[in-house]
Image (tube, rainbow, N blue to C red; front, top):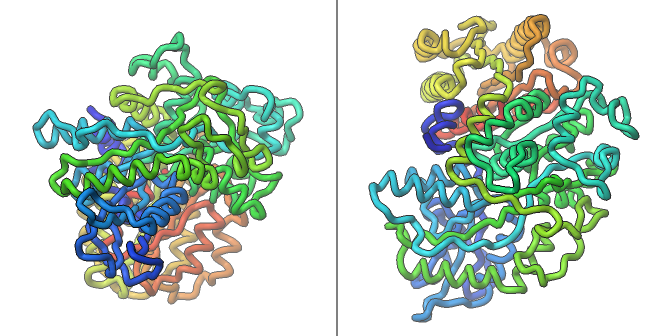
Length: 591
């Protein structure tokens, strides 16, 4: 079973995930000048209307770590007057995606770029393997080998005083040290020079099945705790890390789809929430510079795991064998690649917190100690670990799913009169699909609210209640008022009881409430103030109940829903009938 199949069975299901929500479009300028125009979407990319009719449009789907750099290079390229051999102008449009979601979208036919640049070669290998199976052929999507473009090393961010207590920047810091910290009941109190106020260690990382940073970080972790004798790790050896992976997952309080979202959470919630998170170096330096005034304790630092890390080289693959790519587009894609690899563009990467492939290009600010990274680090000082092949990737993800804490989820669904019609239909369908995507060992309860709050299903294992619960959800109807505040209070009270039961049983789980509403509270009891004062925490706790509100439609009370998300460490999502399924999938990856 391949990486994608494992994850579909355990978490998300057969969908394209959130690629449409995750793609951020970069508008391209007029090939003949700096003027801008209305943009027209073409196959998931946006192209200005005033591009000449004979222009060759090269669409590039690129992993989001290098978003700033690619945007800057595309702007320069489009202003430089590049042409094909027969004189046709070349225009590049880039969209920024997650590696895993974009791979699935390409396979599903919903994303059709000329060139694809995931975070690591393992994704390209996986795409071509799946493509050959899907098309019953022996040919890859790209006729030429994918070409590395840049280095974006993986490691982990940590608050500066905590990292300094472990010896940063002078002493090596390993994954094994984090495991020891995770296993020690005294937490930071066991580290000389650390503040006992920091308490037990708390970690975060992205989901390894969909986020490049998650897969590569967890692969680096396995290398860091398993003795491979200096050789490439085998799938069997991956499972030797089970005890250490379980220790790390027991203190992992946050997952997700994008590394910057983890850092944003650390900035908003402060050092008491997460102590460290597995992310690329570029994101750490960028956060220190762009949001330093929001960061406590002198900001974050980036730690290269001493046993080695994956120097993600973000390959660029021209999909010239795809039926949607013309010979002229493939030619234009190669010309853009050559431009990308030129020294001037490689030096520009430094300004965007990335490292040039060419070691002869001297590093400079912003890659400095002051900004939270070690500029002298290189593959010569921090061993470059091999990119995981398909079998190793499969094993790493399987180990993650085996060891991660299970989730307890309360679904709270608005069935008031304003949900009539398409809204209630799409919401119930998406909720049914969401249940299909949960692990059988996750726990789920369902509440509905209109004039008051009702319990549709008591808490139970997904595997035991799913078949009987799904028909009940499909038959929900919309009528009445909107007891939004009451539903929040009942859901948090239920979750508090479940937490207490788990504590008494010695069980550690993740807790999340999914709150779907399309309007404002129309009941008034409890009041908004009562809800926040008596039913919700003042500040988010890492192992507390996270609420993920879904503002369904333009009339939802987004201000209140955003505040609910903030005080619980959750995240607000906006959705409409067309996007609700993707939003549910995104929430599944958070837990």
